[in-house]
Length: 266
Image 1: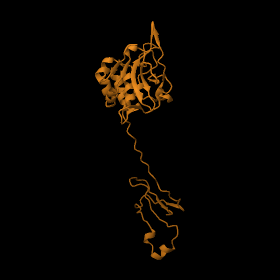
Image 2: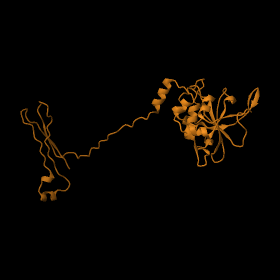
Image 3: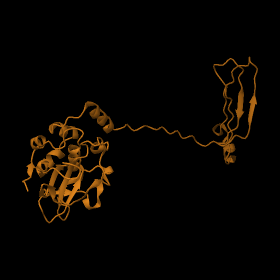
Image 4: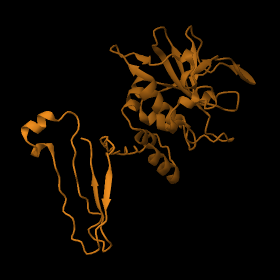
């Protein structure tokens, strides 16, 4: 088996060609993996935040079986720890990957689903090694384009926004695709809702409508309130008081106005 090159910095990632050109999704996948799937502990070890055995995000076991094209070879070194693979957008659970990773996948026979990340996992969720690779055909991986990603490069990717990672890695996105992606990522401003609470008003005892003549002067509102009542009258009040209000029907109309008298239980 040929030695696998290690990518230690952004220039190495750029020269490797991994995840390029559009519509490949490998760089989007690497950005998500570095930001959301792993973290560094106090000892500087790389740890998985999720258990790949649960098949979240489309993770599944990678067999590392021999690939045979004339000569048989294994893609990765033999070891005592299991390998797990992610990146197949057709795998169960892959719908949990963010929209940026899945956006260019149209289920067509193109290159939009050829990139993968493979990890080897120690007990305690410690990642031993991280690899990136790509499919050579439907069944086999391309060993000439399989690379190990160092922990230093994972740290670098964690410090980059997605657009900056794509730029530094030499990924050219068509202008219309970039515009649509940027619009989708914009936060939708929260709508403000104004709720008007109206206090419950008891039904009036009666409503007497008096229709004045067309030449009648505009009625003047008048109110009688419990505040204007003598103190002894207030003491006799229990639960009800009456307010008499004269309400003009319209100020600007030349039609006869109506006076409505109502008694409202307060």
